[in-house]
Length: 478
Image 1 (cartoon, rainbow, N blue to C red):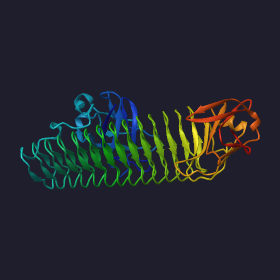
Image 2 (image 1 turned 120 degrees about the vertical axis):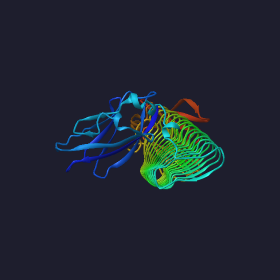
Image 3 (image 1 turned 90 degrees about the horizontal axis):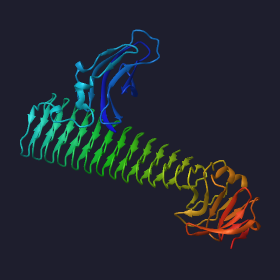
Image 4 (image 1 turned 90 degrees about the vertical axis):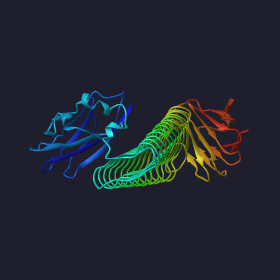
């Protein structure tokens, strides 16, 4: 899998229906944009399988019958490098027409995301191997530091900064800048404008500041802050800390043990490989854990949390949240609000709240009372869906409370993937009531599970296991 930033600067002609421009990789549509009168330039993060695609093209394709419409491709940039007009088969597209990129002449754009030094252009300002401070002009500058710990302040214009070796401090200021830290522990600041910032190797600190920025932290243990507007931040290798700040941001941890914090706005957070901690914070966020055991916290808003591989912990917190554990043995807690909890594969724990809905999924799954909850449960309640094999009345992470569970044979058939259900709780406090099961239904076959001993009650089509010490219909099980 490889990723690249694609920037499209386009304009259009139309009266009512703005044209739809599709982006195709290897002939398949991967994204699209409506080219309105104020479209200007937009940047997309695109992915493809393999080392490089065979084709990249753009198609004006929608269902409008309005005649006389067109799309003009003013500029196409990949990873901040402009594709020359001669490498596009067409600059002006009519309905159902396609413009393809000449892959042979732009092969350097694929298989890696960072530009080479040559692609950054011939410097207009060049440093030495010492420690220098340089200021750019109001125009479009190309600044290269060479060795030493340098500080570049680019000023206005669409600038290109290359720190090279050393621990450099590069500031883009105004304009849409391309900033490349190079080797060393660098501090990179985009300033105003929509900037592309590459940390490269080592441990970098990166600030997007204002504008829609695209940050590639590179290898090393990096810190990256998106700032205002809608930013994309890729942590890549290393143990990174990524902060979206304001705006609807996309944060990708990739490999390493990462910390992702969405901030304000509706954010997308992907931990990738490693042990990751993801906080959505404010807004309606989408959090996905990736591989390994991760911690996901939705924060405020109506969030979607996806566990992936590994034993994950998912906390929806405030809002109406959708939690899905994914593979392995997960822990799901919806928090405040009417949440949906799905354990998916593995032996999962779902924390009970009277407003939530519960699906266990495959594996042996438990619904567990939360601390301080004095609710009585009825297993016939429609909030209990399918795949639930265990109910624990013992309050998780808090003082014990008195709880009662009412359970019938029909409930077990409807809600469990197995022909039985286990019930655990606090001796002397928690009770079970049923019209289908009674103390006289106990048969030989006590079992121990998770360090607890359960009595078996035969219900014919289904069985009920109740922990020794609880009451069944007012009689203590001994």
